[in-house]
Image (cartoon, rainbow, N blue to C red; front, side, top):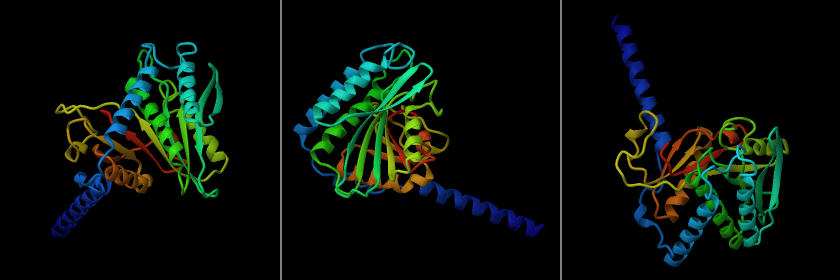
Length: 284
């Protein structure tokens, strides 16, 4: 009996140690000292805020939403995004695919690298919304960030790897987590083409912010490690993407006064293709 008790105790100790190690592995964040962030150009920040607000307002004009349910509801959003890219001076191309309701388009702009053999970093945001919602936060906010990221990259092209920005269609139900999502269709095509992909970043619903207590909810036990106010940006990835997540949040915290947190989950459309993360600022 004593031997059995010892085995049980050792087993429990190993379980708790493994659980503690796994938790630290999941929630550890680099560069925790936010006081060391660089000073920001206030004029540039004010201008950026105005443009972001303008993009969100322009994309969120209809209470019926941007989706396949209302005929041609996606076209104004698609055309707006393409025009913004064009106005920046970028060449836009479309990745089109057909469903039984009609033809749909992912909108793509590429930023080549000085190294022609380098892999590509894909950064995307879906531009559709759920039914009967203007979709300001989910996901006009992500698209707005994508447009402004395009503006930044147009002035400061990437040196070490290619960057591809994509506005995806059909992320919301009934396509959500199916092989008919725009991001899934594109991920499948890039996999079939054997293109070398460094990683994928999804900009998702980053317009939510509040200092109200108990405004942020989590899966069980995550509340033990994160604050209860929804006033931070989340970096979410699966375990395979840990290096990408920690590298991204490290750069974010070095160069931004915003608060970044990370934990690990799954980005459906890309998880079987490449390392990926989702960039969030929402109640989950």
